[in-house]
Image (cartoon, rainbow, N blue to C red; front, side, top):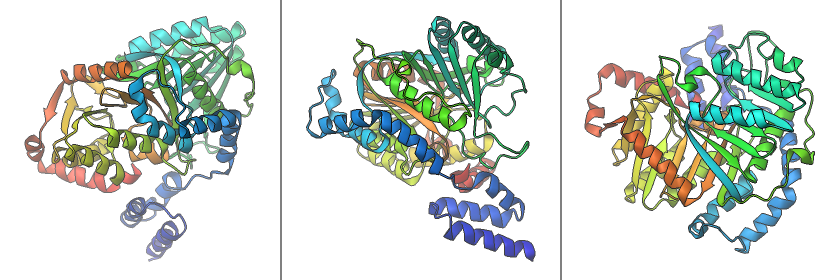
Length: 474
């Protein structure tokens, strides 16, 4: 009786005080009703809204440094005074303006871009750049493993720190919960700095577990910037038999886009670290004359934002499509707005191809993902299941002209709960390269048709239905 009364009270708190999305509210009420007592504990750990006051203060620092540039660029967009290196990109001017005004994502078009389709190529390049660093190395990762590549990265960082390079390493406390104590000791002893994002003051409980810094950034001397889906661990190198070959997409920028990545790292570092970086130090924002031609915006989103900038960017891309949309994501738990955008594009005759892994790494999330495939298949969207290994890429390519690659999955967690960062790329040649990678991946897929989907076992349907009910809070 007492537990029932408490559950009703907590449900009332969620409905009237939290002012959540209605779908999320109902999901939490179900958890409270079906898991009396335990449901409230889960809510305390997973469900509380994040206090934003301190985070907003940090964002003002970022806006402060780039405020004049952003306001000047807004005026140039309004007056149509942007001269695009690739004339076809003028069609996406409204999307650039949206990312600029809602996410303070400065548009640059002096960038060079390397695309890495797996961990072997990415980590080989990163280690080379670390070895050549002269002033600073900034790394931010969601997961770091105590394994071959993890130790190799830390060894390389410690070596550079001993030679006077300023090294900062920011890791997510939840994503790296399995790291042994002392993992970073040699880096710290060498003069490097290490900080955990949202660490718990209690040993076994973290009341901010639901808000994870899922960003993966590496900035070397303010000149090279890495962004994409790869964490640091042997599985991301394809060395763990459970997953086999790990198909992911990571980027390396050279150009002014790196300065936006640097600003994001600094903001996250200053939020997490007891010893703040000198945000206004121009040594972290070197001014070079870059000869690249690729347009880009670095767009961040998270629970500290009122708007869901990356999701809105995805929707804007989808609605701009005239010919094709290629999507790769390991998880697919869309909200109604994104699902509606995909269906509208399909009804308009756009060739939409959607790729997910054929085997799960998180079963509950995979069941929820599978439940949404019906919504795609019934409107003619082609669905492919990647079978060579595990597909972890987060890539969208539209019309072979624009693309987005980053850390955000196509799911509600990435849109609302995680701290994410994506590169929006405005360049026909780069988009074609990403499109060709997708088409090559199709050779390692089996197509899931609506007929095959309808023949799945009853048990799978039950699992999917249960997971879908909880999908807003997964």
